[in-house]
Image (cartoon, rainbow, N blue to C red; front, side, top):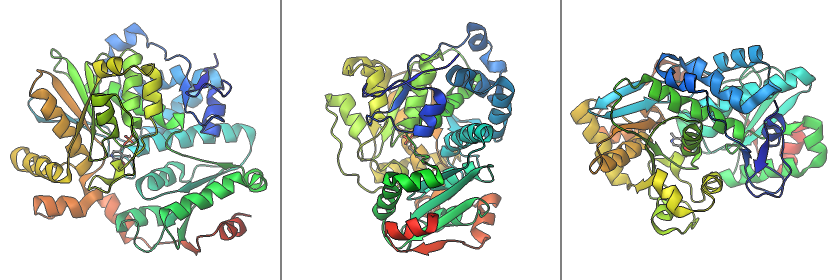
Length: 432
Ligand SMILES: *Cc1c(COP(=O)(O)O)cnc(C)c1O
């Protein structure tokens, strides 16, 4: 069976899974969504608590990939993608943390980036073509993408990042120390310059063909699909059934939250999702007023959520047919200032000896606010390892923290980057 993907703007043709992930964005500038989200098998859902993460990943991905990847190939692909743990850790009574940060770059984006990388690689291996992934990055996305494609046959990755201290030291090390098929270009300019250069390359038809350029942008549907696996995996690990379950999601572009909504449409029984943000609260505001007003983003200590125009809102809106009251039945909105975030982070560390990162702390705070009115079991998504935000975390808890070994190893490696002026001509000469 071939699964079909449509565009939320409704003006682009329906495509296959393969075409949707190679194209990334539909021609009408909408976002791809499956024409139908299949309900998972009753037997599978009833026996969820016996299933491993890989078994869950396989069952769910089959529903979206259809016959385009053969079962054995899909199984080895999923086994490779999910080669780290996603534990559910109890923090206090009825409060659990789903630790999504045990992958290679210590943030949840590893899950999506690895699945996209393996899927693209599977298809290029079949056709024998070679691909170049071109990405502009301001930090976390780039390292997840780079790691996801690291040593994947047939694929070269070229990353553009702004030099001169515009990304953190940890982020820069993660981008520039891989080697092999990953090349980092340190651009003497801003993130916007990097994005403009990448855009020029995609608009350069000759270049696009010559290098077979593809994007690994976060709106790619193959980054969303695997993020639904861990909602199932969380429920599978939650043994204390009885109370309704609520997921609280620290959000920026709302990919994680959208993946949770997909899991619910597939039949995962949970009561509600909480959309939690920092001061960039476009979606919580929408949930309150019905008005969606994108605005320039403001900088916060939870900087991976500093998004003023969340791209996956188009997907959420499509599922609810633009009906606010329907969305409100499933999703509640919360937001917190940096000061509140720090207070929450510190309090949980002192009272529960559980250390969160600033993003997870926002999910925790939203959950606690909801639990003041509602007797539920809550799971918040812990999206990054606290050591990734070491400065903020140490300053907040007034203690030094330990950097995980693998992260430290990356800090000790030698940086390898090609310096480049912020001009497309330079990128063109490099790629040709
Ligand atoms: C990207 C990111 C987020 C936001 O996730 P979305 O899917 O864009 O809502 C939250 N926390 C961390 C650590 C991230 O890197």
